[in-house]
Amino acid sequence: MEQLIIIGSGPAGLTAAIYAARAGLAPLVLSGTLPGGQLTQTTLVENYPGFPEGVQGYDLMEAFKKQAAHFGARFQSAAVTACELRTEAGPHTLTLDGGEPLTCRALIIATGATPRWLGLPAEEALKTKGVSSCATCDGAFFRNVPVAVAGGGDSALEEALFLTRFASRVHLLHRRDRLRGSQIMQDRVRGNAKIEIHWNTVVADILDPAAGKVTGLRLRDTASGAESALACGALFVAIGHDPSTGAFRGQLETDAEGYLRLPGPGTATAVPGVFAAGDCVDHVYQQAVTAAGQGCQAAIEAERWLAAQPPLAES
Ligand code: NAP
Image 1: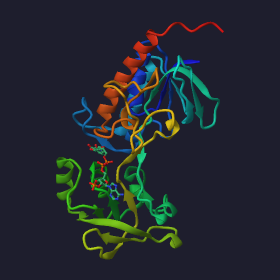
Image 2 (image 1 turned 180 degrees about the vertical axis):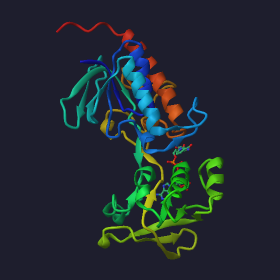
Image 3 (image 1 turned 90 degrees about the vertical axis):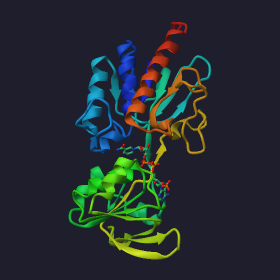
Image 4 (image 1 turned 90 degrees about the horizontal axis):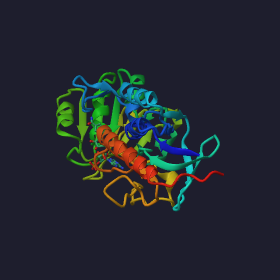
């Protein structure tokens, strides 16, 4: 049985790993389906403290991992599909996607969040064929063609700006008449001649599944209901994220959107020895630095909880 398992390897999970490893707990980190988390899908991170020139998201997460490994954290490439959390003294059992189940005394859940989709049938049919949630991953495939980005938050603005490197024109489609993203990002988008903002606009359909690629969009004006056509070679969907908490459903309390609910001010869940941190909990800030801070808090709380437990009986 493991002393401490950390599920997730984004800023929250890896910061928890650094602290727990330094405390001598030799935590086992389950890296999940996207090792390093969402930051590995982004380009320049400009707001992580300590990097006045910015830092590439992938490089930042590699540095986190190296630091955790340096202090004795261990890593296993696996995602948790189900769990059995015990309300008494544990142990908690985790079911993995391929691999033997694991048991642990203490658990830190830092599973993050995954991109949200529009829910159109054509979207599903055209994923990897022009419909994407990651401009960093797929933007370079669409050189010198017009592309569209759906969303009005920082992610959409960031994707739109990134795509101007490749695309002939970037159409930003937002369902309201005001952007949600931060002022600095809004200013950059408005100052970029390649980006055209379509206000009060949603994607009604994506063309053309029969052709096996994106050839254009059918847009709907949310105010008038009028529909129009937009020719483009790709649609990048950046409309927020859903917390990755499915494996804990029925075991831990969540809110209506699926974020884990913490009963107190710290990171402890209602189950003794189980802590949660980062985007799977936080629907407000969702920043690398806040996730890292909460990961630190979870590790300290897990360490204190473990120290207060009676020694395990020899079996
Ligand atoms: P977000 O802030 O929740 O924005 C989601 C956007 O998608 C909103 O504009 C929303 O419209 C729109 N939307 C949601 N559902 C939709 C639907 N079904 N159809 C059409 N549009 C829909 O999410 P995010 O942009 O992913 O950002 C998440 C967090 O990460 C934020 O705290 C953000 O500041 C942060 N972040 C920061 C940076 C950075 O600092 N560089 C980069 C990326 C993300 P409404 O506005 O009408 O609700």
